[in-house]
Amino acid sequence: MNGSLAGRTVLVVEDDWFIASYVTDALGDAGARVAGPLPTADQALDRLAAPDALPDAATLNIRLLDGDSLPVARRLDELGVPFLFLSASGDTALTPEMRERPRLDKPFAGFQVVRALEELLRT
Image 1 (tube, helix red, strand yellow):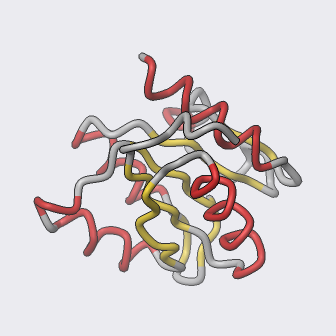
Image 2: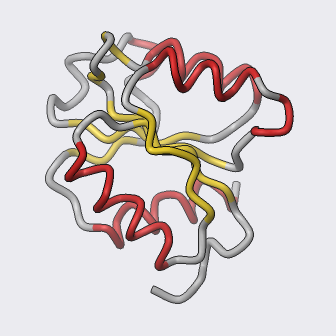
């Protein structure tokens, strides 16, 4: 990767260690600072409560150890932080208002995550 996310902080909310490692490696290769990975929505919400910890963008696995990531998505939306869902279940776990949000279905390649985040951060 080419450092296209240099200077950006990306929150990774993922409960599968292998996928979390894969995503954080891809983001690191693109120059991003990675916050996390965090395996639960509660941990992600706690992280977002700290005003100095606001990320530039986030990736959210839909299904987490403590339920789903929709409360985190709503909070990120309130804060104006763009996010990308990473899903093994398509949009079936998403509420209607979240189905139009950017999503990558698993399996995906690391470069796809980076490209999707680049696009989100351009807008």
